[in-house]
Length: 409
Image (cartoon, rainbow, N blue to C red; front, side, top):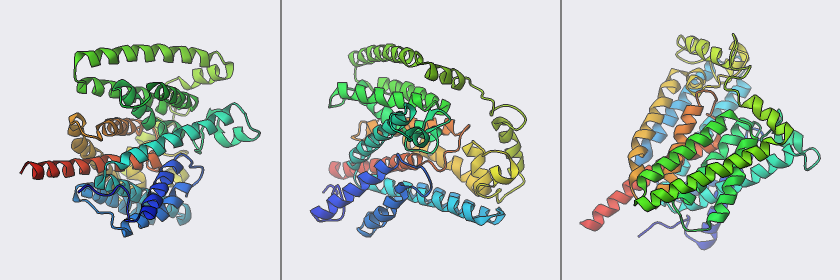
């Protein structure tokens, strides 16, 4: 018998669990400071579900083990810091986010139908945080510009536009997939929502999010093309792509007709910014940072890279893993990434109820690894959610296969 969609057993508590789960995902779009409201909801929700009997599937053991080792590396690295307070909070947040990833994986592994609730809450959060960003950027409310923008760029409910933009990629990709593949529902509404999300990504003026958006759209299109059932579907996809490109070009021209937007776009469109190159620029810090951590098995300790060694954060998740989490974390992180790719990759071409979410999540996950070369992603709530969703669907596939074997026998 299929598992109940929401635990525990009574109608009232099932509804309460669903409401808090929705609020948890929704709150991920509003992170001004740490700890954020997201952590407050998670503190209530995670114990609630596990005490109610949420099972721990063995298929997600690699996620649990590698994230635990990653965290242990960060805890050991605390022995290297000069001032413990901020560093301790930083590592504690890492541990908590790792727990949320494990939690989401368990939820999806037990019942993949929860994906709908989670993705709907994520979409609502994306739309609401974009509204905040636009209200701030265009100064529609007094004081909103200072709250919801940074350096003239929309940041929405985030402290940094470089987190705001990437946060919007997953719902954009899901909408694009559903439009391409004619999933049940209104295509007009989806096109409108996708256009709105693309506007938010553009207004973040984040080069990483622009690249992520282009990579996601191209990859989702390619995978949809491969999975298409016939030539008619493929032709329709090409027509939709041509229309989308034309519409996007027109919208870009309209946006660039505004002088303030045009000047900032010209500045942000440069591949190398003033803080990237030079003797103490981002790329120079990468090279010097890897040389430094090569002699530090315990790492530098959380936050020490920017505070006491260089004038800026690593802005490279691969370097950040070694610097803040020691050699243990630096080795575990790429292992986790590769393991995730190897386990999830073959599932992209299997027709399952969760295939749309898996395809988009997988593509966005890969995109984040590429973006991680120039930005730190280790405290992005949506990244740990993404990781949990993928491993939950990996476990759901194992459950699906076992049930199919049992039915066949």
